[in-house]
Length: 271
Image (cartoon, rainbow, N blue to C red; front, side, top):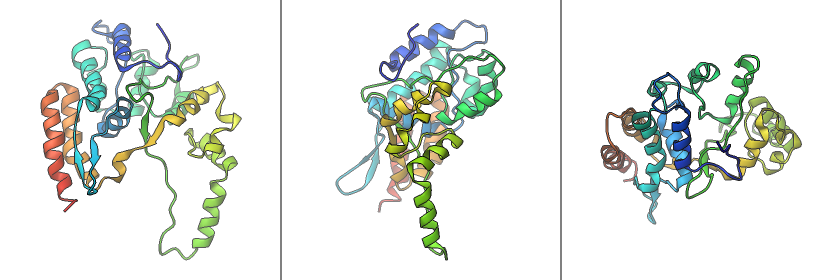
C-alpha cells in the first residue's frame, strides 16, 4: 500500500479504495476509516475545496446563492459510500466528535481518523505505549490539496480603555518567534509565513513537517463571510448532511435541501 505524502497524496478515489482494502465489509468490527461528523458542515465544506467545491457563489451584485454541483459532491459521496456501500467506515462514529474516536483508533478498530492537526497533542498524551501513528495529507482533487480552515483571530473591544496597550500586546504576539511559541503550545500551525519557516516546525517528531508542508494549501473557510451562514448551517445543512451520511436520504434530496431550502434562508439576509 502506498503511503501518501504532501508531494504525492491520494486522490479521493484512491482513498476510498484503500479504506475498503483496510476494512471494507469484513464484518470483524474493524474499519478503514472513522469519520467523526457530529458537526458535519465545516468538515464537508473545508475538504470539498480540494475538488473545486464552493457551495456559496457570490454574484456581481454581492448577493450569495447556494449551488451543489458535481465538484461539491465528491467528498460527501465518498463518505456516504464508505459508510453505506463499502462498509469501510463505521456508521457509529458519524455522531461523534473527534476525541470520541481516539479510543477506537488506539485499539485498532479504525485504521485512520480524519482530525484537525491539533489532535496530535491528545494522541501523544493518551496513546498507549508503543502506539505507532503518523499524519497523512487529506486526499487531493481537481484543486490539489486545497483545504479550508478557520483561523484564530485577535480583536480589541471598541469600548476598551486600554486600546494602545492591547495593540502593543497583539504586536508582541504576532512577532514570528512568538507565533512559533504559540503554535507549539496549541499544536496548531501559525498563519505567519516567517513563523512557518522556523526549524522547530519542520521536525519529523509528531509530524510537524507534514503540517508545515501542507500550510501553503490552506485557505480561510469561505463560508465565514456569508451572511446567514449560521442559520443555513444549523437549520438546513447539518440535518441534511447527517441524514445523507447515514443513508437516510440520497444525493438528490441532499442537493434539493441544501440548494432550495438553503437559498430561502440566505434570501432573508440579502434583501
